[in-house]
Image (tube, rainbow, N blue to C red; front, side, top):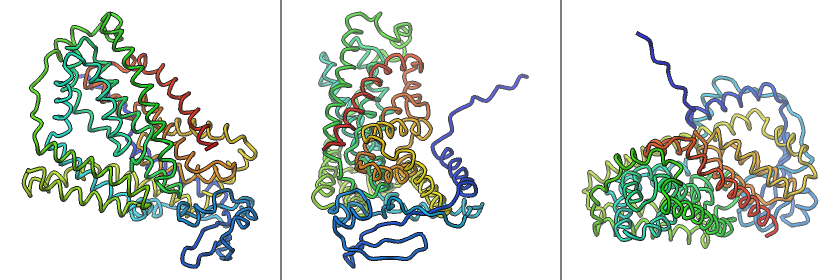
Length: 501
């Protein structure tokens, strides 16, 4: 009997990060060790502190003149108000130091230390996951979408608009992505009955999520982690990304609606017309619409209001992950009463929802562990010195475009927004200081680059989405590549505009 060949698949984000972790440890034995002198603001003493490679600390007055003297670009106020919280490398102070290669024990210890260092983010992820788990168990998200499909019957183009906008809102706020998989069985029959094809359904759901996560406002998994890694406030650049989100959603909707109108007028124009009969046979019947109960409405309202309060806290009170976690813990307590599923069941679903995001939490910890390996091996600054030399004098516009391209390439291999943020941003953000680019622009370049490649990367969610509706990858590429080109150009323009604001 002939054995079946095992199908090769792209490794998960966690596996990729462990591979990178081992590679980082190898680098500590190969790359020369070195350190920059670092500048930090001590809020207790109200003084700048400069720490040289030997560990000696010198205090300096917290003035713009000090920053100019040291050659550190950045707004003084951002140091004083804590927006820039991490030590900043002082240009021209790099020195080689004694090599400190990281061995097997250090490799095993790094992810554990990474989890300790990221515990504030991880706790927030668990509490948010618990809230989402309860709402998913109730069927609140699915029921709300089903009601929308019923209301818009006969004017399904409105459904395309609403679905895309609602899911984009979820993507930009709490990283709505994997949860959308459950929507395909509900919505595909609706779109087919309206004369559209399954590509329209995929586009409304998947691109809504992708555009939302590409232009994040308060998404803790992407912009939250990236801002933390860059040493800036999550609110820094949020308004600009919101403007980009609005325009990005409009561009996406115009693209999807044009295709939907063409297919409805002539079904043979469908990219998957050869599967028309198959799709109609499999999905061409709308299942029972689940009841959208009062408890579901109330629970969704609580969840939505919580995000409204979160935006206020971030902007007005400069909240960070401890306050954000407390807010969603309050949300969970209220959901325990509004959900009406009983105390034991609520706890089971809350814990189950948190468990569903265990992989995300581990990704954050392991990715931070990579930075710890590089920092303890004292090669992070060597890498920074190399790139600083390579981009010395480079035009800021060219620099930020190159940064987005770098994140596109990295995002192909590491589709996890949390993983890519804490792995790459600590290296990339200080480079911005050397060319006079704000760290908020680096966070935007990260989000845009990762968002763009998420349209097509096999390491992401697209293959699972296509499998739900039996559409091949090549057909998706034929549909999405023109839009991807448009969004790449738009993202580049937005990055350039952000440089001059």
